[in-house]
Amino acid sequence: MLHLVSRTDPAWLPRAASHLDEVLLDHAHCEKKAAGAAIKLLFAYPHHRFLQEPLAELAREELEHFQQVLAILDARGVKYQTIRPSPYGMALHAEVRRDEPDRLLDLLCISALIEARSCERFQLLADGLADEDDDARRLYSSLLASEARHHGVYLSLACALVGRDAAEARLAEMARHEAEVVAAPCDRVRLHAG
Amino acid sequence: MLHLVSRTDPAWLPRAASHLDEVLLDHAHCEKKAAGAAIKLLFAYPHHRFLQEPLAELAREELEHFQQVLAILDARGVKYQTIRPSPYGMALHAEVRRDEPDRLLDLLCISALIEARSCERFQLLADGLADEDDDARRLYSSLLASEARHHGVYLSLACALVGRDAAEARLAEMARHEAEVVAAPCDRVRLHAG
Image 1: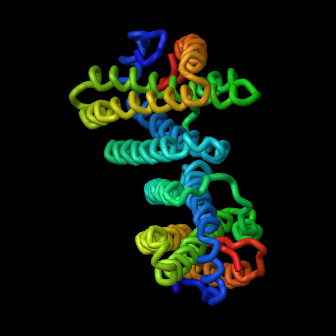
Image 2 (image 1 turned 60 degrees about the vertical axis):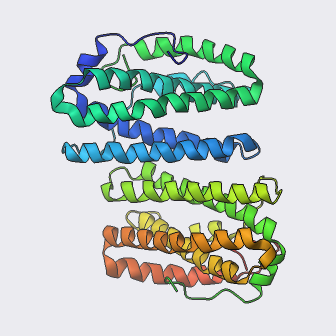
Image 3 (image 1 turned 180 degrees about the vertical axis):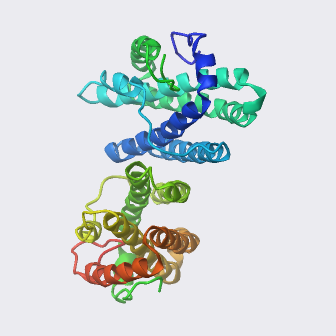
């Protein structure tokens, strides 16, 4: 699915469902970080004209999702506060190469994979949450399509950068790493953790 | 006007009008920086719940304006690229105090003043650009109201942080500094330069 090379362990959903407030809080920070990452690319690569509108548009959507998650946290009486993230993002970024265009290609592939994994997990939540969590279930249903679309945006930017073959080859390589990282045991229940 | 303590020197408009492509390019970067500044506050102050939605909303609007300016640059055949900024932003930030809540108050006041100055100058451009620059003239007309609104958002966040009296006192102090900084002679024609 969306270039992922693994499916989420079936044990994840019941853990997530029973720690849903924590998952939603983690999710709020993930949306904020997704917007931040897109805007960081706008600042780092002003000479890549083709990145500008797609990433500005994408960042706007991530911010809108951030606001939607905040509204659900409020409705559930969950205080928005910092939360220790999963090691996922840092582990993926450890693989980013230093020279250009490798560096940008890797960053685009990482974002594509994060969007893909979010999409896969949102589907699990949309299908598997209980009736009493209908607010969150509807949220995850409604966000699925954007995550899949954002995956496509990042992939198409990677293709524009280095051509389709090189982009897909690197994405496949990083997808194997992503599958290991996301499955690593983690003491916290997070959107992107085992 | 909007807590500014000076009006733009009448010599600025003819200079800006005759270097409009450069002003538009500077403007694109300003919108991007405005979004970046708002998002930076989201990351720096997650414990200030009251900042989250207003700044996420504001950042989305700045990104939309960024896209609008890019479209006009494209239509005019101006290449989007980096441009040496005016000393304005850095000069304003040099006054930011180190301890909290002073630091955040100062950052909110600076953003309020930048929005106010943008609003004042957009009005000059909307009224004073030639018919042949109708695309830019219409852009500046359309952005005026948001800049005034964003000024109000930042001011109301400053009031929420430290109370109305303290917020307005610091804003007045920084507005005097802003008036000096924006009037300082500059060899470049910029949205926020003399």
